[in-house]
Length: 230
Image (cartoon, rainbow, N blue to C red; front, side):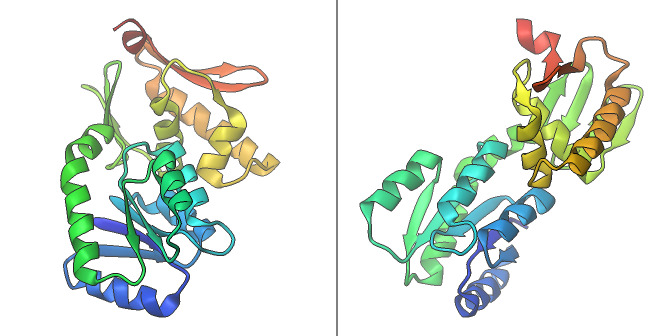
């Protein structure tokens, strides 16, 4: 069952769309604004996003930028009530995959969702798996495993590791990591991050080819010797 993040502030329309999609065996996660939408995206890992552009607090284009910073492959459909080419251009530049204009038919939306899920299915499957030294990391299952251990990651551990491993052997600023995982870089969250980093290091320490390195005053890098020299 495909999981859809649907972000729409018109609650009457959202109820109709949600119920219609559920009759087609989709699982719908609805948010009424962009901030809530981003929190649900991080927490529930949807398969596709349907984002209204005009929303309070955080508009659909801004939300898509935040989503793309975490996941470069997830399909994004923009819903717009405006017929402005500038929105279309910006949406595709951000990394949107499709647009649908209000008012739309449910059949059209369903076909667009199904087509994108088919086209990106293999890419999404590949993104959910990474080879990290001797470990295999399945971000969708929140599991990291090797020949000796299988460790079930917590949600926060998984989100941190997912961000770190998207840019292996590259600098990731501490504030960037905090904002991706918690939504802000407060002192409390910063100290909590330190705890999770130590936990992840303890899991990975059996393989000398991979390390979470601290870049003092900057952030971190996920060092992968095999990735670096492959």
